[in-house]
Image 1 (cartoon, rainbow, N blue to C red):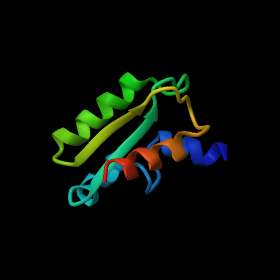
Image 2 (image 1 turned 45 degrees about the vertical axis):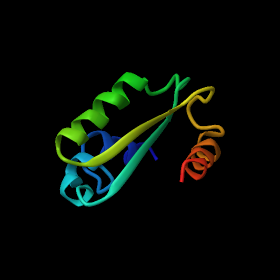
Image 3 (image 1 turned 90 degrees about the vertical axis):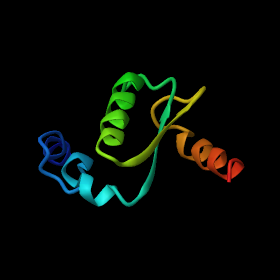
Length: 85
């Protein structure tokens, strides 16, 4: 909903990683994004991942070529992870 989105943007939600960095420090994270995403710029995602890394969070960025915002991002991400196990 619009209210959920506004709460997220203002940091008033439990899913905001910036508010829960301590909970992320003992986890391994992969942030996946379509390289052709025209909604969220990959440079912004890379900056965010760098901030998490600077906060000692074990996180990697996975940019998936040929994928935009949504679509088959989930399927391609899962396949890449399986292929690299």
